[in-house]
Image 1 (cartoon, rainbow, N blue to C red):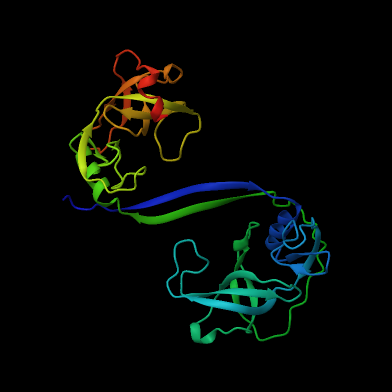
Image 2 (cartoon, rainbow, N blue to C red; image 1 turned 180 degrees about the horizontal axis):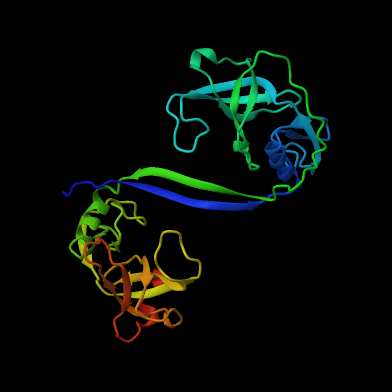
Length: 313
C-alpha cells in the first residue's frame, strides 16, 4: 500500500459586490465613525441594518444613528486567533447590542483574558486609525465603564458614499487524498493513469474515490487507462486566473480516457481554441518534474464516434 499523501491547500477568490442604499449608508457611516441601524415598521432598530425586515419582509430604509457604546449579550473566547481575524492576540468574540439598537452586532472584544469578560458588561467601539468604509473600520470593542455615548446627530447623508466592496473569501485546509487517490497520484509520477474498477458494475473510475458512486461498494482493483482519450464536452475560458500563467482564451475540457468510465477534466493545447470539438482525440503532454500532465493535445486520429462517448457526457 502506498503512503497516504497530504498537502496544504488554499482556496481564495475576491468577491466583488455592489451595495444598495442601506448597506452603502452603513459602511460609509463606519468610515465617518457613525453607526447606523434601520428602523422597522414596528419600531425595532436593527444593527447591522438590512434592506428587508426579516419578520415581515417589508422593505426598509429609515436609517437611525445608534451609539458607539453597548452591552455584551453573549461571548466566546478565542485563544488562538487565525489569519485575517480582527486581533492577533487572544480576544473574545462578542455579540454587542449597541445603545439604541434592538439587535446585536458580532465583533471582537479586546480583553486581557476570559475571566475579564462577562455577559452584560459595557463596551465601546475602538475605531480603526485608517477607515475605508468596511466592517473593519471598527477595529474592535473595548471595556467601557461610562454612560452611553451620545450620538452625533448624523443625517446618514455622506460625501463620497461607498458603493461597492471587495471581500476576500479564503479557505485554508489540509487535503488528504486517501488510499485510492494516493495510488492514483503515485502512478502519475510514473506518467501512468490508474483508476479502480467496481467489482459490481465493472465500471472504471478515474480518478478513483475508493468506492463506486453508482453501487456504493468499495473498489480495490487497479486498472491502467489511457493515455489517450476523447473530448466529451468543453468550455472556452476568457477570464485570466490569478497566478495562472496561461493566456486566454484557452479550452478546458472533460476527457474520457480510453478504458475509463468517468471523464476527467484538463486543459487542451496544441490546437486553436476555436477548433476544439466534441469527439476530438487527445493525448497527454508531460512537463519534466511535474506530477500530472500539463495539458492534452490532438493525436491526429479521426474524431471518435458520438456513440462511443455519449454515456460520459
